[in-house]
Image (cartoon, rainbow, N blue to C red; front, side):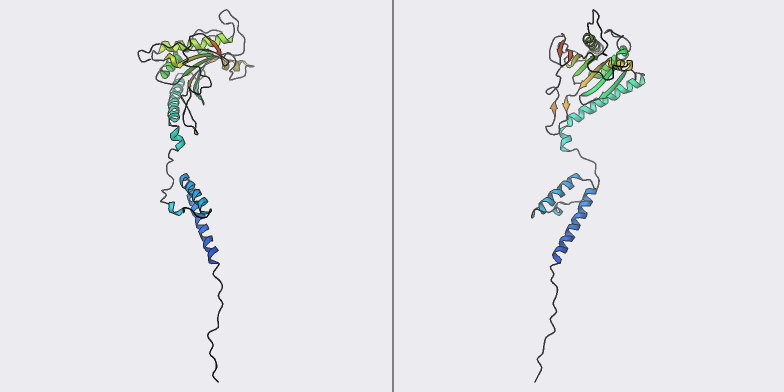
Length: 293
């Protein structure tokens, strides 16, 4: 009886289901390394695209991140963002004020006026601060001292500018009671007015419509009035070149005159002091423009 032939023994093979998670793992590792590479280039545009692509991919499909990849030249010069482009007027004005500050600081250094005059950039604009002793005798509103040296440089720098100029007088907390100045309100206001009028005599191109004079008396101290040194710092005249623009990333540029917290310039009021926002304010009456005014 012939033997029945049998085929080769059947070998059972393991399933190939492991290939699926393996390929997923490789894909995730590749994506991880690409992400690290992209982040190392500090390219914010690519990072944003990558985040959107991963968000879409992990939410059941969507555009592939790899289709958006392109040659990356590496670290490039930063381009102005939409926010910067929207505030170009603010940036340009800041550069203008910085240049004025640099010129004043250079003049102060060359003429040894560091103890009498200083400049500071603030959110409101460029602040020029002059000590009382450089402009007025104690208890007086008559110009003297270094006024003939300081006035011309300030007037010439202000002439071509379009910003509002607010000149404010400040005193210490020592009371004064004279026939001319019954209180520090009158003294601080008159000092601001006299210095403003002095600037007009130095440069005929200054436009009075842009100028305001304010007296704050002793109510805006920058130092402690308990010491003589502090009182000397508080007795001062300040010239604020107020910004025309404000930095606002959400709403773009805003006109500072339209949103002014103290709209005290160019109001067309007569030269009569009034109490306004804790200060005696004087705005010179507008004059017909001529000779470049």
